[in-house]
Each structure stands twice: as structure tokens, then as C-alpha cells.
Image (cartoon, rainbow, N blue to C red; front, side, top):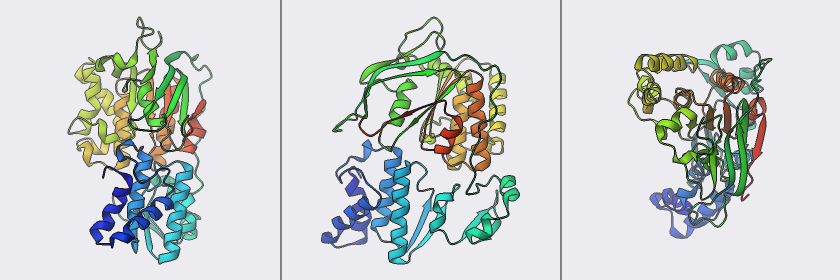
Length: 389
């Protein structure tokens, strides 16, 4: 629906709930998930995490006896994720409801969980029991199958002794962004430099403008105020040029972008074609483009879905494919929006090593993310965007 409150009310109306009862339940559900706006907030102005929170409110408003949740806090900021867990705990306590939770990272969910089922790749059950029975004494099994134990944290690989000297790649000056009809800017008069051989993390609550800033830095949005320009290191002979004005053929070889929703950037019907498309359009011979695609598919564990349609992949596979397509044209700067969404332990560790390696060989990397462990392991600098900068 076009307004947040109407979206939550939709299921109640279809259930035939008495009209006088609908809006009190809508307001209660929005409050339970920590909704930061009123019920009239336009849904087309919501961030990915805010959309996720709104969808959960719509489910909670129905007061179900069974909740089936697929990574319900994956794109939420820490405070929003905590509110969601508290809301679910209250539902379980008040209604004796059953919760089935699909998750890669379970540490913060353990107070709500009474049984853990660990699935094997390709089907079958590896373990089934209480949290204590499952998470104690099975470290080797978890490592072998790429499963997150509750206490797993990543560590950046050792950096090379002779790391490249940082150079300015992208220069943002006095940037401002305010969605249509919004009562405040996401951020205003923001200055920022993206440097080579460095990882910059952009963090902040849902709705603070992380994805918007990522797209501005990637040349995908035209700023409402201010400008984003290239340095000589990023665009030799074109220093000071405005990145959003570049044609796609130039942009794709200089700045690679990964969207928060990976399916929004798929253009072909097979994984192999998706990976080769960018290099071919950038002028690389087809044989070399296919070779590069093969290497990336193997590195990001996509070789098993080589012939599959990108839209049939799991969420985690789609995320890895979107990262691979951004890397395929060997850009000097990479803008990654929630790159670790939906990853198991093995592919998360691989993503960590891959991104660290890109920075260590001279690329500039920007991460817009809520993944605190990824930030802690990788970030050389961190920009925090509060609400209403």
C-alpha cells in the first residue's frame, strides 16, 4: 500500500476485523517494531530496513499463532533489530505462539530459541536439538559446512608489507539529499573523500541515508545540492569530471556498485551471461570476459549455479552474484551496499578476504552496512550518519 498504516491494516481488513479494532492494532504493531514515523509515512520513501520492519508489523498485527520469519533483522540497524526481538519475545510470551526462524547468525536470538535444526547443503539435517546440544562440541562440523557458531567473528587477513599509498579517487563536496515530501534532509552539506587502498564504512540507523549516499558516490544519482567528482587517479585526463554525467561504458570500468536489493541489477537469463556482460560491454574480448567470469564464479562459490537464472538463486547467492558483477569490470572504486546480506559463515569469510584483498591491492572500497563484525574487521575509516544529519 502507499502509506505505512494502510499496509499494516491490509491484512486485518482482509480478515474481517471490526473497523473500530483495526487502527488500535495497527498502532500497537507499529509501536512494537519501533516504527519511527506516523502511519501516513509513504512507503516509497522507506529504506530497505524500514520496509522490513513494516512487513513484520503487518504480520504481528494479525496476532498469529505461528510466525515464519526468514532473516527478519538482516537489514535492520542494531536498535531496530533489538526492538524486533523484544516484540517477538512479547508475542511469544502473551500468545504462546510458535516461532520458526531461518537465520545464519543466531547469537542474539538464543534467548528466544528452544530448538535448533542445522540443515546440510543440498538437503538433510546435520543436527537437531537444544541450543546447548547443537552449539557445544561441534566446531569442526560447523567449520566444514560453513555454519555460524554463536561466537564466530571475522578477522581481516594480514595486510601486505608494502601496501599502496592512498590516493583520492572520489570527492564529494557539500552533498545534500532530501526525499520528496520529506520534512527533513537525510544529510546536508556533507564532504567526503573516497581513497584508494582504503575501506570506508558508512553506518547509521535505517533511514539515515546510507543507500542514498552510496548511490551518489557511485554516480547513480544526481545530487540535489553539491557534487561528486573524480580525481586524476580514478579518471586520468578527466580530473574534476562529474561522475553522474559519465556514460555507462565509462562508469562501469571506474566505479562498481552493488545495490541493497541485488535483483534490481540483473539483466540476463543466466549467471554466466550476467558475469560476462559488464566486461563485454566495456570492450573486453569475449574469451577474456568469460575467463574473468569463471574465476569470479569459483571465488564466490557460484560455479554450481553457472547455468541458472539469476532470479531463481537464493538471496545469499544473488548477493554474491551482484558483488561478482561489480568486480567483473575491474573498477578502481567499489561501492557495496549490505554486501554480506544472507551469507553463511564460509561465504562471509570469503567476502571478507575478497574485499580486504581489493583494498590491499589499491582499490577504494565503500561499505554501507549494519554488519558490525564486517566493519570491525575491515574498516580503515567509519562515517556515521545519524538520523537527520
